[in-house]
Length: 102
Image 1 (tube, helix red, strand yellow):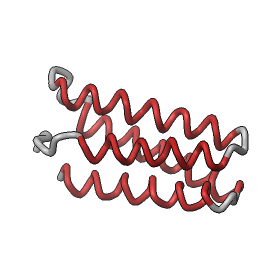
Image 2 (cartoon, one colour; image 1 turned 45 degrees about the horizontal axis):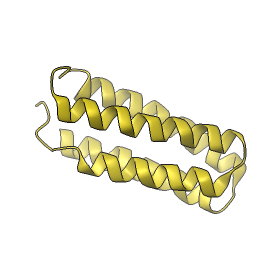
Image 3 (tube, one colour; image 1 turned 180 degrees about the vertical axis):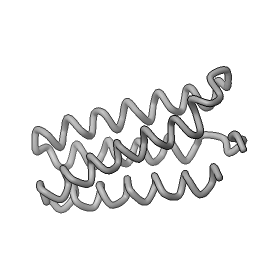
C-alpha cells in the first residue's frame, strides 16, 4: 500500500543520507543507486498511475529533482550538499498527501 511504500523509500533515503553525511563515498554511491531504483518503482506504482492528481504530480517532480541533485552531489563527492538535497527530498515526500491509489 501507499503508506508502506512511502516508509520504504523514506528508509532508503535515510540510509543514503547517513552514508553521505559520513562522507562514505562507496556506500553513498551504492545507496544512491538503490534510492533512485526504489524511487522509480515507487513513482511508477503510486504516482504515474494517477497522472491527473496535481498534489502527487507536484510532489513527485520536487522529490525527483532533489534526488537527482543529490545524485550529482554524490558523484562530485559533495557530501554535505548531497545530504541537504536528501533532507529536502524526504521533506517533500512526507508532505505528499496520503490519498494515493489503492
